[in-house]
Image (cartoon, rainbow, N blue to C red; front, side, top):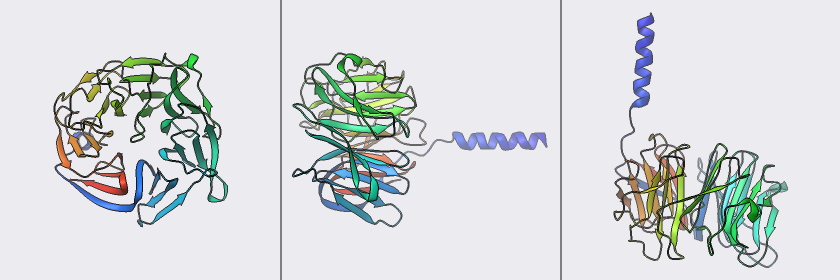
Length: 340
């Protein structure tokens, strides 16, 4: 009996260690089309929430395919949304320019304004939650430091961190509002990627911060880190480049294996060039990565050392549902990706 049990344990252990086969292709199914620029999506159970320009936001039911879309206006203006987030009970969306408007799910199915910021240089780029209570949003520099607002009550109220609590800023430093993926959180850790090729890091939900440098190119306003993802507290990947020179693949991909303290360029000078979003493939033990942008979808099965193009279809942002299905958004559409 004892030997039978050991055999079963070994069989289960071996089954878990079998690596997933690399992707060779991707099927693309369009779920929603409209004349919008959609740069932020979020999986919420069996729904995909999104927010876009023209004040448009909504959900796609992933079971039935039904789309519910609404428009949020602020007085006479129509906000442009490029950041979304969620807790287990609420959905949040954040507009970019002054006045920056942050909404959460409210009463009677309407969105409730929970934060507003006005002023020269106000421009918010990305937002996420660490858990059901703690959330963070980031924006371009104002008054000498990056704009960071946090919540600790589930998004009911938000407060802006003073520059005295943040690392010294760099003139013109900000973040790219390209895919809502230049913030990554894991447990109490927060990583923020900037246009200056820096990583701002907090290990205590944003109470204190330190800064790490990367070798990512950032000499021009259109260069820098556009997207980061972490597989665990040590392994992370950054991607970006210059969207005005999308074929340039120098100094636009970097990897860290020590939690962001140090970064090394990888596949330098090799494909892919500019990408606006990168995500680790679930169940790949940190070896699988998918990166996309307006020039197509690329895939790596070896932590970014080598890449292959799976599609030339244009998208801005990506979220995996499982180890072979992801949802993406871009110009005028939301689609489902099935990797094979």
